[in-house]
Image 1 (tube, helix red, strand yellow):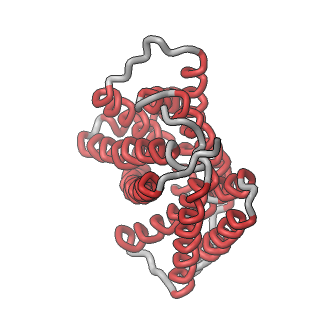
Image 2 (cartoon, rainbow, N blue to C red):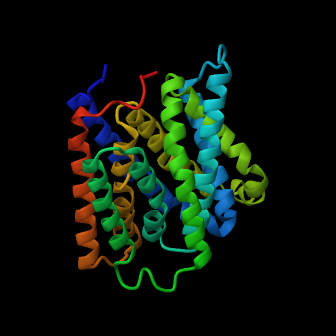
Length: 295
C-alpha cells in the first residue's frame, strides 16, 4: 500500500533542511579561519573528528548487536561524508563559498532528476536548476577568474553529495537513532587522517583554533547531519534533493552577512527561483511515498 507523507511530517522536514543549511554554511564560514594553519584537509579532519567525539558523548551509541547491514550502511555513509567534505573544503579554499556550493549542488540536483518519474517533479528540478545556474553566475564577476581546480573540487564534492543522500536514506532506514551517524563521522575522520593529520596537529596546539574547530564541528557536522538524517526519514529522496537547493541560497546570504559580499538584482531573482522550486516540490510531495520505513 502506498503511504502518504503527512502534512506535519513534511513541514517538520522542511524546517529541518532549512536549519541544516543555515548551520552548515555558518560552520563553513567559520572553518575558513582554520585554513591558514590547518589547511583544508586538516580543517575537515578536525571538524569531523570533533563532531564524532561530541555526538558520541551525547548519544552513547549501542553498537552491540549490529550486523553486516548496519556496519555496511554506516561505512558507506562515512565514505560519502569524507569525500563530500574533503573536496568541498578544498574547493572553498580556492573559490568563493556561494559559487562552490552552487557548483556542488549540481550533484543532488541531477540525483533528484534521475530519481523522479513525475513530470511535475522534473519541472521543479528544472526551475531549481535555472536558479542555481543564475545564482552561480550572478554578482560582480563571481563566475569570472575562478580557479579551475576549485571548480573541479566542487564538482567532485557534488558527486559525493549525491552519494551522501543515497547513503543517508539507507542509513536512516537500517540504523535506528543516531548511532549510525556517530560511526559514519568516525569513519570519515579515519579516511581523511593521512591527508589532514599534519595540518590538524598544528591547529590543536592553539587553544583558540581548537575552539574554532569545535564550533565548526558542531555547526557544520553535528547539527546539520542530525537534522538531515531525520528529514530523510520523512521525505522522498527526490523531494529532499530539491529542497537542498536552499543550500546555495543560504551560502549566498552567509556570504553577504558574514563576508560582506555584494548581492545584485540577478542574485535576488535567482534566490527567488530556488525558493519557489523548493516550496513547489514540498507541496507536491503530499502524495509521495516515503523513502523507507523509519528506524
